[in-house]
Image (cartoon, rainbow, N blue to C red):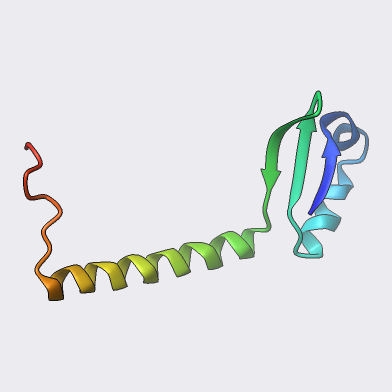
Length: 75
C-alpha cells in the first residue's frame, strides 16, 4: 500500500491514477494520522460480490438449521 500526506496528494494528484492503475491501495494521512484510504474500484466490486455470496450462504444455513434471528426482537 502506498501512503502519502494530504499535502503530497495536493502536489501530485496523478499519483492516485498511477496507484489505482497498479491495483494498489492508497492511504492518505493528515498530521500523521490516517485520513482516507482509496481502493481500486475493481477490488471494491469484487469484495462486494464475495460478501453477497457469503451472506447468501449464511442465509441458506440459517434456513436449513431453522435459525430465526428475529426471534425475541421487538417489532
